[in-house]
Image (tube, rainbow, N blue to C red; front, side, top):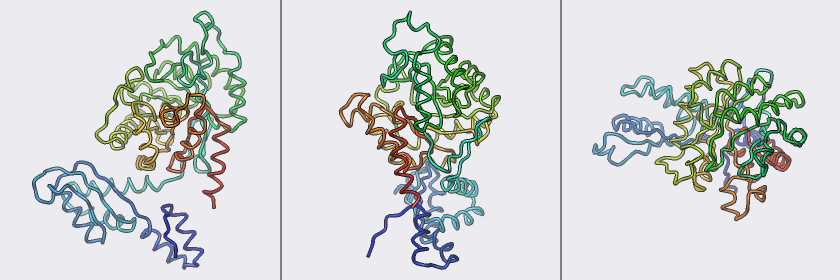
Length: 405
């Protein structure tokens, strides 16, 4: 006898096929074997009690605050516990209910559809990235003198030495990353390490644009500009970039308009605070809930300003206003971000939480980075942003080989 721990419907289907279950039977049974936990935040106790009764009638259940059952509290969070088949039936029952439950039926339908969706093709103008075939690797090029990982191409140079337009060795380094398996190259001219001070638009342009223009003629993968300044993003897109990687999550609506005008891809990242202060005791009442709400609002803001849905990527912001425990929880529960319906990018590479766990410096975090990336992809990441492209590509090939079985 075996106790199976399987959550992937593809794996369940394969086991049923090995048993030689009738195809029609597989179609009926798969939804019954796919269990979900759906958390709804802050609904009225009346709504919660109706939900609980409806779930119980389907052979499922709902966890609510004790005070919601006794009438002592007006609001409660609600945890729905059931299989996919039960949720499909619940959705139909809620459509005819009052107290906002008909609206909840639509949200439930969207959430389940987004969670189950695993097929993404990013439209980046001259590039189309198929994220369904395999996870993509974003290689990092830091054109800064103060990168946390010590890999900035202006590292250790004096102000007078920073006047050159093209740092020696940067272009060959990118060409090697592409050869090693990088699908995207992310270029940044301002450090976002904890405690970093901002640089001027003029300086950021000087550091990045000549390199982008040169690389756009030499490599055949999309170039991403890591910036929160619309002026820098526009110049980078004019120079050949196809993606804007915005650590501020499109807070400046001008950035969304630039992306829309150029039909560029956008990475919307979550950050609590700003780089100068973000690691000063970051606190969350509900870590995943707050990040998901933040990203959902940013996605809507992007779409309202003309960014197409198939150009949006989300990033929960590992290390940006998060403690080590926060980062580990995000990686462990990464699949919950699938409810937003957009491909997930994760950037754990050489981050401080790896150093804190392993007790090593930034240059010795390659094994921690590799394991974090494999875990992220296992839990739903479609893109990983890394310094060590070859090591991560090799590790992901092993994962892909197992995942295809």
